[in-house]
Length: 190
Image 1: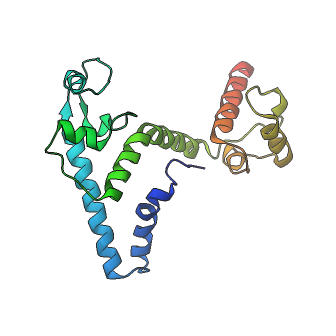
Image 2 (image 1 turned 135 degrees about the horizontal axis):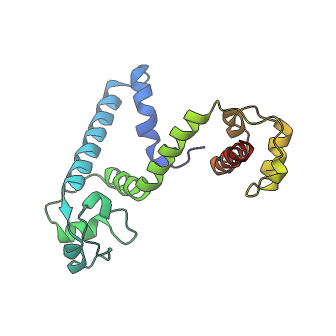
């Protein structure tokens, strides 16, 4: 369940390329989508390429860590109290885009750190998906797993971590705990 990337607000961005690939949409809809993608990319580039120091931001009323590291406007946009209106009040050269584009940029910026972490988690799980779970594993001895997850794992008896991840109600966090437990158990055994 990768909920951070499976949002209603980005369904168009995720699914329209498939509709284009299989000719499920009209040329007009395709053209609108391509324009949307171009606007999104242009706006993202503008915000990414405008780099500012914490000192400038502080003087402008944006509370940010005074660590001396410069940040792009796209990075700054992820902070809770920072809006595009606030950014435009400081940097008047930032163009206005359609509300849908601006909302997507704000949402993507806000979740960017979490999404990057999720991508790393997905990569790890894909790499470890076929790793076998020891047959004699005692799920009850794994602290950190909820009783519900332990029960489901005992009932299904998955052979691999990939199978375990596909059990309804077993979260990626639970799989991480299970992996750590198995790796630590193997280290102790050897």
